[in-house]
Image (cartoon, rainbow, N blue to C red; front, top):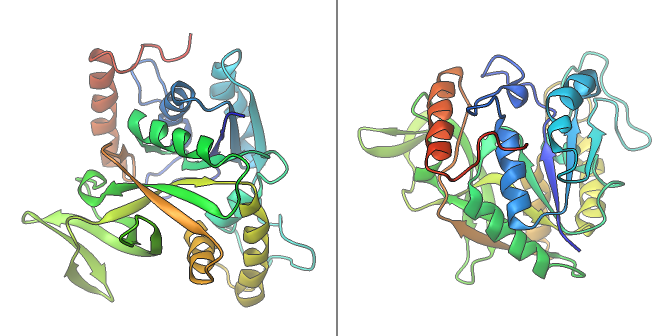
Length: 300
């Protein structure tokens, strides 16, 4: 069975200032998602599942999903503030959904095979999808054996400000032992730094970081549901607390429940963290198209 690509596309992109998932940055108006789907199909994925917000479903179907008809089966699931386990309800003043951990849970009924999780607004590169597809095919029929694609920190920076990345600690056998969210990472005076407790500190140049490019088997959904209940018991009345994928992963590793292999990729990430990143992204996709890495238009 071919693996599924699960794309997290429910966010608004607050720093970018708009619905960046639908922003056409390719030579023919392609979105970053379109390139991820193209790379995934070329790597051997067999189905696409999107998680979006219900309020932009029609625009999403018209602008995005219509392109893929005849190329790949597509399903859509929805993330919402009140999609909670029985017995929980959000604070009436809360406006945001509950983060990437909740978004993944929305795919439980749609996904029954090994699957990848990606962000809609990140470009990961063809090599990353090939590495992940091969790993997921090996995970068929297994449980408690997950993976993620790890990027060298130097390949993930923005020239327009600090970024947040999950710093991966990896043991001698290549398995993840911890992922720590770090903020304000940028290159200054030739060195990579980040903000720790309000102060600028050095960041390891050879570090692998998580860009939310995960590989799971369906048993992950059950673990995640349990972790979400634990999270809500502690934080359901807070207005901005979010439930993240690394929270689930870290706890499962600490409990010795799972092994998670970190697969290094040579790919260079790019995306539109800031509005000022957009032109560089447009230029990069034009260059990749001119070099023949991608056809233009992507989907005919």
